[in-house]
Image (cartoon, rainbow over all chains, first blue to last red; front, side, top):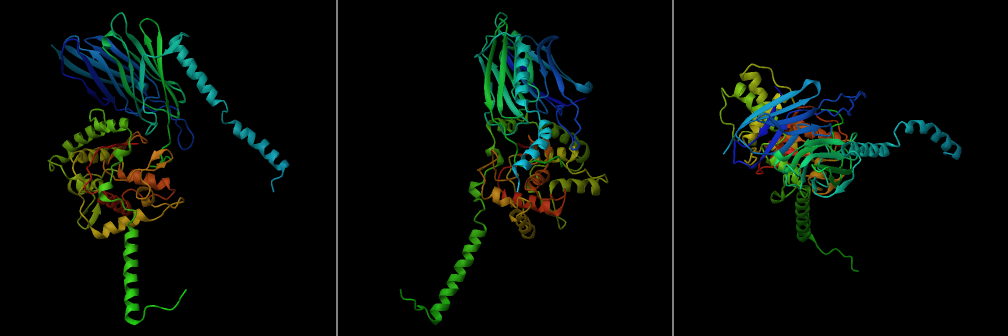
Length: 106
Length: 153
Length: 255
């Protein structure tokens, strides 16, 4: 499975805004580069990122070739209840990556 | 030695070669940026304000530029940021990312790392829940690295 | 004006002796006049923008993270049966081992081929970069402390000061004499390899010091030495000795 690195706090107070930092290992080939002999290198990027919190989508992002390699996406969400945050990346050529994190909200 | 006749002949030959380079590339990119913004806003006016785009004015390297977009908003169900769109002026295609937020975000603040091909504007547009659009534009200088690889490793 | 000779005999000989000594001293001083005084040395970190620095500082979002993770896995499966604590190791390389000057990557391959009877990792392969990043990380924050070996240092210094390529430039001309000034909009750093292997934004990936040195040589339109060649190792060695005492930042992020 594709490598990702996620930083999510394990605990939070109810109503607190928590920061989630994500990194995905991906070359993000932009589709505009050419080889030494002039052939176009086909695009191969992560196109979408979704975060659900206990099954409810709380964040979604569409990514384009202008995102750098090994893309970083840092966003926030309100800690509403204890449960699971599921993060999913999808992209060209059937790329998928997922990460699951539990959070305890008091 | 180059007479006027020789010079004119030379320029006649050279013109088709130069014509391969699109002389209109700047205009085309500008048009594609405007089309992209129009696609997002549906033609509605975009006002500068409420959005803060944090991007270095002189980048270390255009391949990886950290950006942060923050929008002033209470992020309540009644009044929040629906989406943040980031565009560049000089990239081959104008979109960088579109982040869909909502009241569950708590704060409208997104950080990412993007590619900026050439010196020009970077534009962040926030789509608010009341249907208005706000933006911030920063002019960024991009230089080429001094020591490149030229495809060798 | 009176043009008679003023000094005679012993006084004359003494005068010329003193002049010769002074001239020799002057040449010796000027030969290293370009050298950066130890106290004025700055890491490439100091020449980067705030944003790039924070990419390096925040270990959770340092783009070299994936290489580190892979290096840790590789170390645990391949090396941990012999090696436990690698703290301080990377700070001592390149070093003379069994009479030969080797860098960290070459020493890893010596272990691979001789002790593990496994094929050597290719230069710049993901595995070798990951392992040297992981081993280097164990020395992060420690001062660079390569031992001085006069013969190899002299060879490295000669390479550093020799003009090369179509642009006919020596490393010292940019990095000793003109550091801090702008080259095509980018500040020229002092060229201290304080964080290798690095995640270079230009490569959008990891790379070793040898790869970076080859980039520089291509930059002055010189034919770059092959990976693992004695010239590159000697140059690496000289650069690390030149950076002695400076803190290791592996894995660093550089433009």
